Length: 304
Image (cartoon, rainbow, N blue to C red):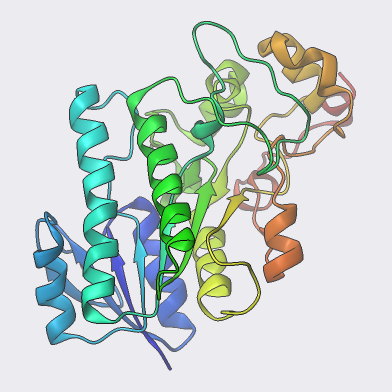
C-alpha cells in the first residue's frame, strides 16, 4: 500500500481520483479548500498558496507521490491574469514542496486546450486523430498556463530533477452524478449536450468519465518504469459525445476539420489515448453509451 496526496481532492475530478486510489487499497490525503462528506481520504482543509503550505502537510504526512489537480478549472471563469498566475504558481509550489519533502513522484493535470482548438481566429488540425505530437497553440490564459506547466515539467526533467514527473490532459470530465442529470461543467446536462451537438462541438466532442481518469492516475502511479520521465498524455473516452457519425458531425460543426475528418470512424474519438494504452495499458471503459440510460444512437444517426 502506498500513500498519495491529491490536491483538489474534493473537486469534480478529484473525488473520483481519490475514490479509485482508495478502492485500490492505497491511503489518500486530500488537500482542498473544502471537505466533502464521505470522501475516502484524510481531508486537510487548506487554501493552497506557496510551497510552505504543502511542506507543512508533507511534514505531518509522508507520501509517496502527489497528484496535483487543484486549479482554476474553467477558462474565462476569472480574469486572465488571475487564471494564469494562480494555475502556474500552484504548480511551482507543488514541485517545490515535493523536492523539499523528498516526495518521489508528481503527476499534474494539464488540458487538451493546449492545442488551441476553438480559437476565434480559426484553427485547423495538422492530423486526426489528435495525438500528443500535435503542435500546441494556446489562445487564452487558461491554456497558456497549462502549456507553461507542461514546459515547467520538461525543464525539471532537463535539470535532472530527482522527481518522477508526468502530465495528463483529461478530456471534458464527466462526474458520476452527471450521468444522472446533474449539470456538467459547462452548465448543461449530458442529454442536452447530445441533443444539441453545438454544445459539445466546441471541445471537438471530447469527454471522459472521472472514474476512468482516476484509473489512469492509478496506472501512472503504480508503473514507475512504464513511461519516460516527463511524459504527457491525452486521456479521453473511446468514442465521441455525439449521436451522429463523427466525420459528418465534425464537418458540419467544426468546418476547419472537414478535410481530415474522414480519417475517423463513425464513433471514433477525435483525441487519441493511444499513448496511454501503449505505455500504461490504460483505456477508458465508460462512455455515454454505457452510462446514460436510453442514449444509444440509431443506425440512421450513425450513418447520417
